[in-house]
Length: 159
Image 1 (cartoon, helix red, strand yellow):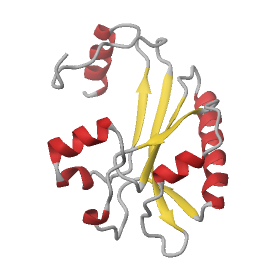
Image 2 (tube, helix red, strand yellow; image 1 turned 45 degrees about the vertical axis):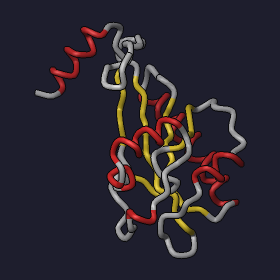
Image 3 (cartoon, helix red, strand yellow; image 1 turned 30 degrees about the horizontal axis):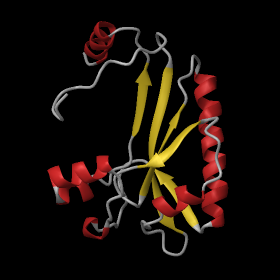
């Protein structure tokens, strides 16, 4: 598979849900973005029972993702568990968390790309634009049992 091809379809239970959130890591001192993602995750004592907590493109952001769930209550429970886990670890490290949109006064040249092959590839391909990807979004994943169903659902929801 070349880097321009799509990966293999991964089957999920029909209409299961998953949520991804990209979160800002803020300095408790001045509320600016802080370069804390790698250190925070290296010190994180977390067993994965609510989903994943992982690096995102810059050291000023992390991504959390819930487990695939069959109900909205399941998603809410995972999000609460992820929030509580992160709040405790961030509090100990004087880091604030914030989500959604962009940071109001960050300077993209100050962003540092996270270590890792995926992030290196993105940085090599897009250069400075990778640092400008500092946007904090939310993704809702809907499970599909086949690639054809996934394409149909994407088209149906896009109308």
